[in-house]
Image (cartoon, rainbow, N blue to C red; front, side, top):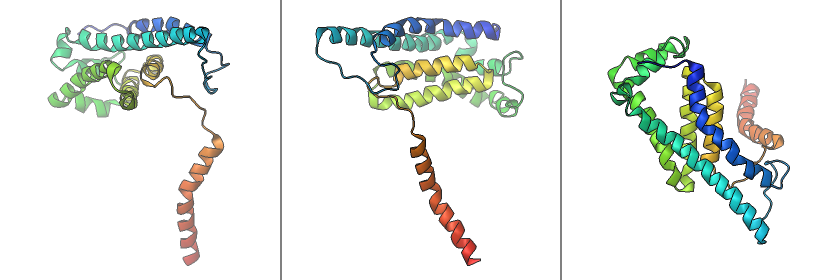
Amino acid sequence: MVTPPVEDMSQHLLNPLLVDHLLLLPVTLLDPRRWHWEPAVEHTDTPRSQVLALISGSSLLMVRLQVAVVYFHAAIGKLSVPEWANGTATYYWFLQSMFGAPDWLRPIVVPLVTNPATVIVLTWGAMLTEIALFTTLVVEKRFRRYFLYLGLAFHFAIFLVHGLFNFFLAMAAALILYLRPVEEECSIPDPNRIRRRFDDLIEPMRATHMARRRSN
């Protein structure tokens, strides 16, 4: 199985996503907010606002289509490679000397890819994950967050094995654009609210500890 250098492979995988940067330009330039953490601005029913909303919505739809095509091409393209078709590709990818699994991960990876059953599960599981992410294009919004978690976990696993951190960041951003509902607002977590939740969580443990000290 012939594999390209890691730099070439990563760049080849990221090239299709460069189009997304251009497609996001109308969304960012037509957004009246200073940054996307602010609450969404209510659109009026004026012809101008409707045109701007149509342009932004069309751009985001094209981004979603682009990401879906990336996953479809990644899954279907593997079927023509004998190692992917017979379920042994992850053996070669994970144990490749240049960008295979790091030394600290090999005690876990080697038994998996040298076992006939688990190597097939890993290989075909990767293709099925990509197909599932492609089909998410038509999945109901209430189920998309589960596919988002699946996609993020999938690409984080690729990062752990192959060390492609830039690729992980790019695909994580693409997945958020692809699967996170546009109408859901982004908000920065309130540190005080986080601290209060943490205090509420540890308060019973603290009370139990103090009661034990008093009893002793």
